[in-house]
Length: 235
Image 1 (cartoon, helix red, strand yellow):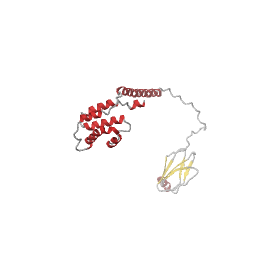
Image 2 (spheres, one colour):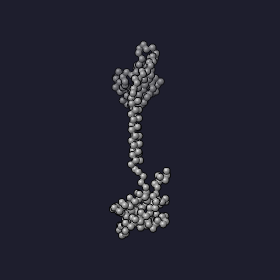
Image 3 (cartoon, one colour):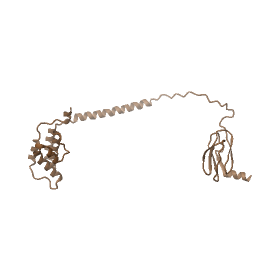
Image 4 (cartoon, one colour):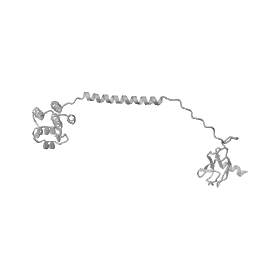
C-alpha cells in the first residue's frame, strides 16, 4: 500500500480523463525509458516525461523503467451511437455583397484621376515650353553673360553650348585643347574666349585684361544661319 501511494506521488498524467485521440502527458520524478507498445503511440519523449495517445477506447498500460501507468481511455461517442455519419447539409449561400464592386469602382476612379493629371501635366509642358532656336538662345546667353559675376566663364560656357548644337563632333564634353584642335578655322575666334573662360574658372589670378565687349561681338559672329533644333532635325 505504501508503494502504491509513493507511485501516485512520483507519476502523474494529464488530462485526468483522456478521450480517444487526446495527447496524454505522463510526468515522472526521475529519468525513465518508456517501452513501445501496440496499444499506444509515443508522440514525444524527454528524460522525465512522455506524451502518448491512442485511438481505441480501452485501458492502456504505459510500461517504463520507473513504473507501469494504467490509464483508462474514454470514447467520444454517445453510448448508443449507431456509427452513422450525420446527413450532409447544403452550404448556406452567402448574402450578396457590393463591397467588391465598390472597391473596383474606387480603383478605376483613382486610375482615371491619375491619368488625367499626368496628361494635363504633359499638355501644360508642351504648351508652356516653346521651342527656342539655338541662335536665339545663344544671343540671350551672350547678353546675360555681360551681367554675370564671372562674365568670361559665362561667355565661354554659352559659346561652347552653341558650338555643340551647331557642329556635330564639337560637344561640350571636349576640353579646350580638344575643341580648338577639332574646330578648324573657328579656332581663331574661339581661342581667346575659351582661354579667358578657363583662366577665370581655374586660375587663381583670374582672366587677363581684355575687351569683353569685343569678345562678345566676336562670339556672335559665329552665328551664320539659325541652327535647327535636334527635335526638328529628327522630325
